[in-house]
Amino acid sequence: MRRDRVRVLLISLFLGAIFLALWQAAVTRQPKGKGLPGPAAVAATAWEMVRHPFYDNGPNDKGIGLQLGASLGRLMTGYLAGSAVAIMLGVTLGLSPVLYRAVNPYVQVLKPVSPLAWMPLFLYTLKDSGQSAILVIFMSSLWPTLANTAFGVASIKRDYLNVAAILQLGWFRRLVTVVLPAAAPAIVAGLRISIGSAWVAIVAAEMLIGGTGIGYFVWNEWNNLQLTSVIFAILAIGLIGVLLDAGLGRLSRALAYSE
Image (cartoon, rainbow, N blue to C red):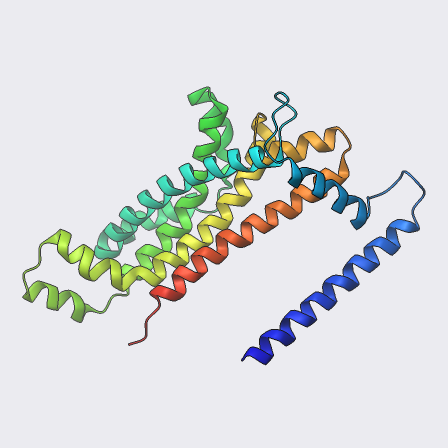
């Protein structure tokens, strides 16, 4: 097992080195001052940004740490609210097949709608770009968790619920000791999908609303033709996404069980 991990790591590093070498070679063939910057230029910019991540020189000149912090703050607010609502609705629908069939057509109609499509309505209603962005995250987080929770609860073995009924457990105790633990792997799978969708949506939403955030940072640096900063921001977005997914992946593995 350890040998396989080392082999995977070495192959991954080798492929990364090949990619960087091809990238640098392609850059050196470009006319000077034109085309994309190379990995060396991006690394230099990244080092400068990492050295001073929290400076604040005005609305359009903030450190990468402040930009990511603003995005993560919006993400967590909208994601936690959306996940709470999704789990409550999913449990309700999963426990009631009739209600699930009645509500499912509306869920299927709303689920494919891009969260960004709601932005004009949120802006018109709330008159606040920050709150509108949070609601976009809310919509991004809602549907995957709702669908997985409803499926997980509906798939619980009837024997578990029958035993809870025999023991005359109250609805809250039944929910905490039977329903949620049994459906936990499916719920976490939905949460894992939702966090990825929400992170993608917040970057796009921030490009529209402006202000502070990694999405606005990317757009602002593009307007300034600072492509090294744009590429570094893209890498930072990807790294944050990997860390968020890895955290929920570890939680999923911890809650997994076999009968």
